[in-house]
Length: 359
Image (cartoon, rainbow, N blue to C red; front, top):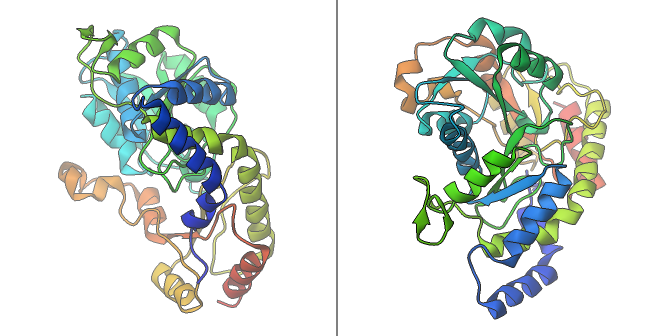
């Protein structure tokens, strides 16, 4: 069976360094906000060309805290509207709601699956105060157009970078990251971070993640407990130097898929071969997804659906269930993610291509 993502094999190559880090943390006896977290925050900020990195417990918390930080700074208030893609993982929308803000859904571009900039302005109202951009599947959204809109309407620009570790884009925007184990840059458990060039926001975020406290037992804000674990930070410090090369392997596999899969029943993703995609996922579309997935399973190829149900059709959002977002619904009905990881062999890639061409 060709696994969709072989996490055991991915992390096996770092096992010796992981063991060394585990011993180091145990020997120090400092398990919360210690040297490994500080080192990681410095290293990841440098990697992202950002002034600040704030390590947090997970990717959802990263986004929630960004919004809560802007609220503390007086740049947002309860009931403000945030533009967000209709086609995204539900966490993007949950973060807005958990900060007592109002998500306003915008359809994606069918070629890139990311938010369609041409549809944003029609959704902007007097209550709109920000745009949450999602770089879905690892592909950079059309930031130039989106930033123009942001400047025009004086909107905050926040990026959900949970699936796009390693994407480089010049700008002073604030980003939320997830290091869930299956990400291109994954920990061995839940972990996340925020990067920003905003000094005032960073100062607030460092406190908010730690009960609202800058100094122990002195609580300036109503914060939460969302700290990057010392041990997870240690593991991430081991893996960070390899992220660029592993993304390169993903791109090389994607190039082969795009040039060698030739089947009219399968719609391949759009990519201009630039560095604007890190292929967290390689997502194809097909009219009869169940048949294709069953065929691949019969041929020992594991696939995953990201995601079967769009957010506005989820039971949790019953008040949205009657809304119509036809492009989003089409995407969620047709997408299928093929095996993609930095530990795939060329023989495995050959086999996936062969089987798909025979479908």
